[in-house]
Length: 371
Ligand code: MG
Image 1 (tube, protein in one colour):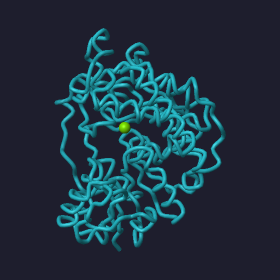
Image 2 (cartoon, rainbow, N blue to C red; image 1 turned 60 degrees about the vertical axis):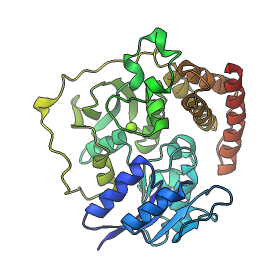
Image 3 (tube, rainbow, N blue to C red; image 1 turned 45 degrees about the horizontal axis):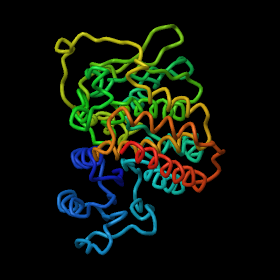
Image 4 (cartoon, rainbow, N blue to C red; image 1 turned 90 degrees about the horizontal axis):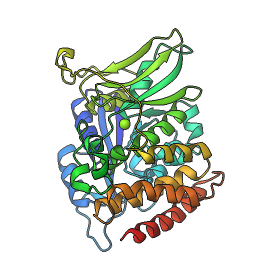
């Protein structure tokens, strides 16, 4: 029996890769697809991949939608109609609503939207506890695969970090660097925001939060590993480490998530360890990555604090990509918002949305002060 997959965030890099994988994998078929606002690209994807339905979440006002494409104004549930599994690759905190809808429908969620857990982990707890959240993020996919067959025998998770494009820029230049220098990620080929978040290591701090939700009871730490060959490690209680290694390619975690708990048969690229560079491991440099510590401290304070810091990061990264603030200012905006925000407990999406709005206003003011 084939498994029908709904793909949300289908015009982004993970979304597009997923469409190819669904098309190429026997046993998978495409259900509904959803994009944010780019109806033109969506129309191309409809012609090429023939989804059961296609939706745009927020078309530009007054836009006439191409034939076969609907506006998804009554929420993401319609995209999931008839699906057996939902891949959520929406970028940013907008992805949380879709993850919650997936939970309401009781469908397995292949999660590439880390904000769903960073911001809304508390709300997704029932789905997590039901074992219905399958990580797509490469580090978490690695950990989930390493944990198989090791129940009760793992005590620590070590996420690897490449250090992003900022790692080779001299510290004195880094503060004033612009998008041109930062958007060249050394090992992974990704979208704009995540490339900046890798350079600040905010992405890695978010991944720590994500890992805490996905793997409760295990301690989670980060190791610098610039070669990106080891995709994360777990420590077994006998003291040995278990890891997965290979050429970085998001097709691997996507295939595993879409076929979970089966293991994909589709070979990716064959990779020879003799071609790898020497593998190195080290501590994160707190001077180079001040925002990393800021986000982890925010996570420890809990409640609405991660939502506030995430919103601040979305605002700061957008301002950076627009050339309104230099690289070093991103960390300062995050620290300013973390200082001001009074975290409250998370009982509903409203609590998170309020924190998000307040943090955006505050972050916007801090960005203005730079200009
Ligand atoms: Mg990752």
